[in-house]
Image (cartoon, rainbow, N blue to C red; front, side, top):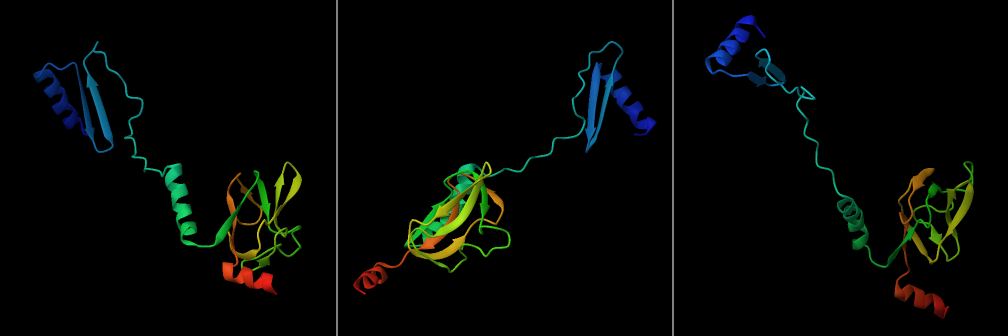
Length: 163
């Protein structure tokens, strides 16, 4: 700010008998005060940026539920505990299942490591793996959907029983 501009503000204060004057232009801020005037100093001279609205937990969950609601005759295999998801018994091994794999009740789908204990997660259903929703070696939460399994249609399962 130029001295001439300061002089204008000082004269303005004198003319209107002001104890102090605060001027803001964009991100510039100036506070002038008379001797002995009590001036409260701002904690921050920078303007507070607007924080973008974040989605609520309910909105996020609703967004993830929508694609699942459109699928018929499917089940969702959820994590029964908190831990780290592994799709194979070891890094060198093939995954237990992949998208398109046919699974039977009791087949191992993955391992969740919790407190250094490897917990096999088994299928409770016969069907086909439609989606694997977790990346290998990533943490999972209790109740998080891990797999989407397409169940056989009622006509397919009745034909299997007749064989």
